[in-house]
Image 1 (cartoon, helix red, strand yellow):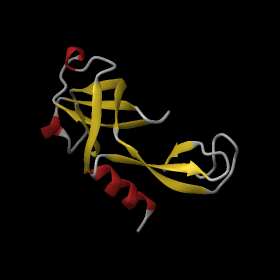
Image 2 (tube, one colour):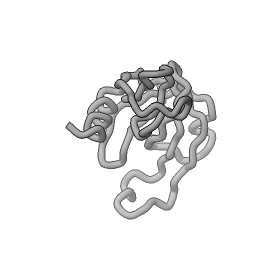
Image 3 (cartoon, one colour):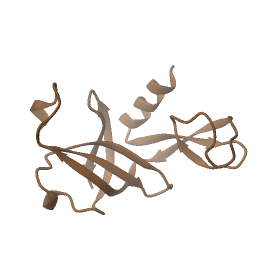
Image 4 (tube, helix red, strand yellow):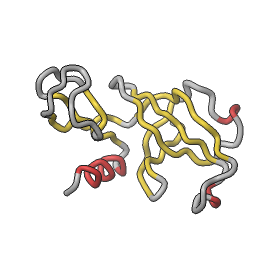
Length: 121
């Protein structure tokens, strides 16, 4: 199984596949090749809970091709509760800033053709 497919399967279960440096223990998203802390190229998988709070977002009202049926939506950055990592994803039904104050608790609920799906808790 590819690393990408493994990441997708974990996201479908509401979690995040991270990589933990075998040398210093620093956590990274699954897309790095060298530890950003110590430079080590060896990692082990770590499965993290996909819960956190909204760090920032942008509301999309004029979507790219293929996303018209989802408008309006927000592309959000979720700061995970249990790690110093941020994950970006798709949150439907967000039309104005009042719909999603920064700091709102949210969680990963799946993965589809849009990418990681995030909903308010």
